[in-house]
Length: 134
Image (cartoon, rainbow, N blue to C red; front, side, top):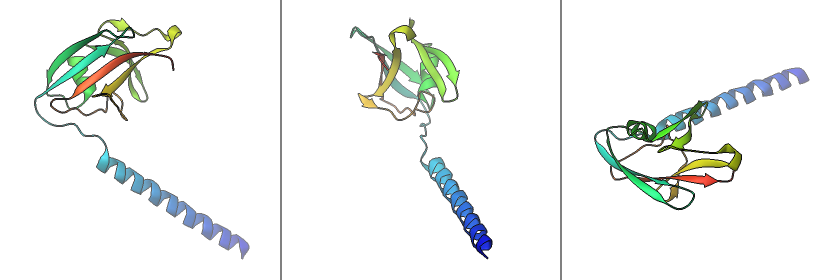
């Protein structure tokens, strides 16, 4: 009798777990970042560790930031399971020995998405900052 109760509890827990995963997947699909259609004009400002910066105005139909930056041949990097890991911006390559990396912000605000999944809209101003220290 005890084994039947234990098995029943395990089956119920498994069903609940699967239901929670399904609900989370549905919520993600409903709220995941989406790019906007059509022509857009955005600005990508490259900021170096010495404080100097250069702005690039990009006219694009891209929905996501990576495509817009690649159209301008502004970024290069390596693919990872999380998308593109940017190692070079406007000819400046990070130095791992100095713990350098590129940080992308939108109008000074933190992004919760990578370059592959950051949606863009007309008038956006992105900062791509060479950052030192992990």
